[in-house]
Length: 599
Image (cartoon, rainbow, N blue to C red):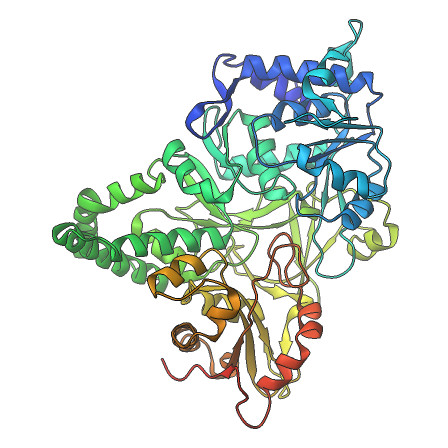
């Protein structure tokens, strides 16, 4: 008998394994759902949505923070055969108009705070369901469930869903133009979950947090679909500032994050060590981190750890590092991931030294999320692992990486020309990435094809590599845009990290943590200059940043400069800050333009 290959079918099988086990919970467990209660609510939600006319091929949108209520509502929509998808909570009414118009949904499930914006988008909605407080003209979740008819055939409905039906839409936060709606089938998703778990094992009861937006394909796969396929326990994190508390509460067994989260965890460890006031404890922490640093250095250099260092690290682990991992909540991990963007090698090395090896992954929404990975024991520094089993790849003449196999999207919704541009007649998807492959099949991401810098001397450079190298030495930097295309040398626009600004201002007794104040502060400028110099020391001369400007602003995800998934919008940045950029290339050093000096 073949394995279930739709999300309703796998959910029904998983929910029956241990109905009394907790499936979804809040931090601390004050709110929780057992698989039994979860399945019962899924049935009620499906019946209610069916009473509204929702069925196979329809679309249902979700707009809310990460919360327990999302799961039975989302999975209930899947059981009607509908295509369920999430939108970013930061979308404007104008952006919602495009997405809802493209998706064709007439039902939105949301928090009350978004009702006015949804109504203002101009796309008429048949039904808005509010998950929290009541809003006139909307349904509560209880009212939705009460709509279900007694003659609704729940089993026949979910059993009619086929592998070729579209399970979700993922709207790519493109760096230019409107987002494209990636259509992903149940068949592609089934392949993704099983192929991934064949490399990085996932079992019933594994614990993970959901903290990225549910519109982010990484959260949908790791925090929703792996949950449905294998029965992981989800702890929802409604606010990113609660992530540290969530990790300490959950002690996840499987976990992943984007590079910026790993970098912040690294900075938090370093800060706590620096702030330790007990002399004995401080000395032990410094010793343990020094040993961890030597292990990390060996890892980064690709050399084996000798017996003496291995023995010293074991002592440091027993005395300090194990407790440090437990304090972070990362002491029970089977595996850890970093994805969505390149992660600085120094960050990987730091956690390796702490005893937390991280596997870097590569993927994209058009390929159902994760495409390549290697288990921690087989991971190679600087690579994103190997293709999942069952996929093919080849490299085009211009270096672009092409992929073919079951993970390839169906199409861009209502965008036949853009689909044809990305997907050829033989099934090869053009990824837009420049990726190399070694003799063992390990992949190394160079950069996006369209983003490579070619300076005035004709030298090709990866801005992402430059930016990650600099940021690894600069926790105060939130975003960095390398400028250098058709220029004699590279410069950088620097934006400070909004979360790091308040503690930095307090620590240095600055009058306020606003971006204009910090950008003009001599201490901040010196710190950024020092960090850039340290990063430059690891780059070739032609790649180095020669001048920089700290912009008096913070860049918000979804704004003019960065996408909702934290990718730089390089062309809009170049246009918006053209004057600042030109000033960095003036013959004389202009006011507000700085040089890094030497490391």
